[in-house]
Length: 257
Length: 348
Image 1 (cartoon, each protein chain N blue to C red):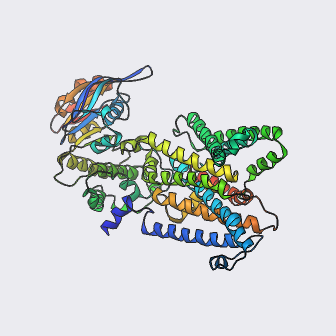
Image 2: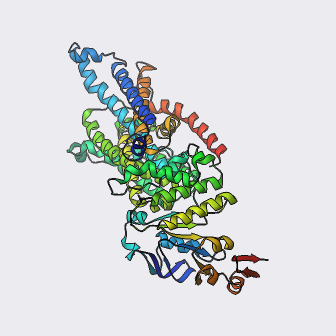
Image 3: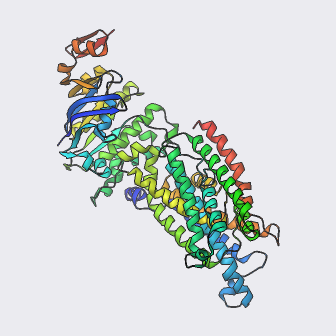
């Protein structure tokens, strides 16, 4: 029950974007990817999501090579939230959230539709937005709506033991501190319900606070992997980011100047 | 209440209750305009007399062999233009995509013109005859869509204007080719060629109509089930595939059905501009943007609009006829301008 990447290489043209990255996303855990711009975090997330096929290495969802899975089967395993494109037509917020509801085979599944949608809309605190036009929302509000859609895609009634994964590429961009905290708490709850979470983060202090595990990326390679205390050290951060970093241990706090 | 909501997403054909009501109203509008259109013209007829068996032999002949095929054809052409416009706008995520503007209709017209001028007589006289024109139209339409596919790198998002510029070029090329064909054609062929530039529903017979009818109907039936996927692709191609949509299959589905519907329509009625542009926008303004409502709504409104426009074309300057394309362009081109200004304001 994992998403497993084994020695993944990705290159586009002559640019080697990822070199020999092996990593597991485990149900119930929040795994944060950190690293400087251009370190390959988003590329790795795309490879895990199946958006691009690695040049070398493989990605497995529960021991099944994703190149053998259909596009629809993949959608049952994982949902992805990343930079979104502008909507051309005037959909309502509710329409966008409901786009996350999949065509699953369970006959009973559709009975839960409105219960699930309502539950997730409340959890993401977008109740006041649902009847608005999506294009009138601010950037941060649009993020929260797409987040709700990604959660709805993974929704199954309690007691379902199918493994599912949530892949998030900088979900906190444009959010104010209250909604940032809310989203991180929802991510924590989601992980606690047995979903594996991979999150690309820029804020090292948030990563230290919320992640169970952290993978530090630099120049297309994974430099280290472990608990926040193991990975976020003054030495490795100073080397990777090229600035002076100090780390206070309790609570784990990173400062840089 | 809860059941209704789930119903809306998956089982309801025409969207929310309000949207279903709009589609039903449009259907009523279509029925009324079809009744009026079959009863009126340079030769007045009464449906009631026909049903009660009170009409003369000439009256029923005009009704069954001239008026009815004409009304059926205008409705079908309107439906396929409206539906294709809606689906292409959805697929390209481009509010200005219209079979006419992006050159698909011109491609179909060119295909049909080529067949008229240079096809050998034995083909026309064979059992394939009635299928020849629609097939040529479809081939022309499909080649243009394929060209667009290549030029926009797989319909990747290249901006709204790019595809229109390609359309201008394609329209010009097709115009040149049709122009060349007019020089090598005979007098009789020339007359049939000129009607393509403006479109007409006149002179259609059941023999010509039936194959096109089959093609257009199957295209519509093939297109409409793609509605949910067309909604999802509004999020972007990558996002749609993350939600389980096989984007490549969806593209083939929409392209094949749009090419078939537009190709067969243009082959029988010539280029009728702006229907595919205006109708989907009107339907969106009426009730919403989700495709399970938009696709059937656009088909029905397109049909109603062209049936009425054809009625106008027949009535305005009796006993002569206005080209139908003149009427749709007169309505459509100001609308197009308005749309451009609106888009500019919204900063697309």
